[in-house]
Image (cartoon, rainbow, N blue to C red; front, side):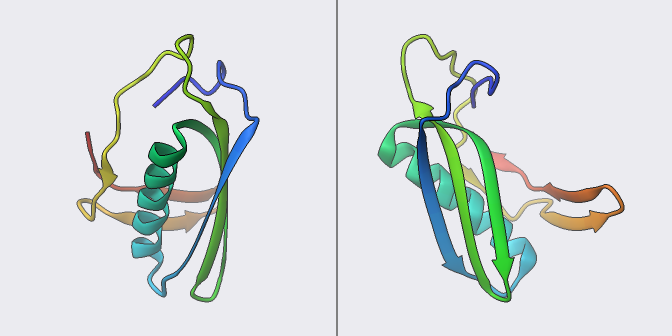
Amino acid sequence: MVDRNTANKPASVDVAFEEEDLELGLVRWLNGLLAEARIEKLALTTFDIERHGSSWRGIARGEPWRPSVERGVEVKGATLTMLSVRQDDQGWETRCVVDV
């Protein structure tokens, strides 16, 4: 949504929820972040999430929207289309189609 190299990170939002399914957890996490970013009027740039069983908790950092932050495409929501979450030797790869 923004160039993360030009945004500061003074603000943060927390998203916590319960979800058994790994793939549905990704969609819930993304949609929770999008909702919080809209409510708080933030451009989020860094993300951390932890999962313990069915409990998820994540934090995202960014800054309030300001005129000097160039906006990219506004993402409206994450979907179940082409949803994939998998782990390999190099880490996690997650995919889904988003509505814009």
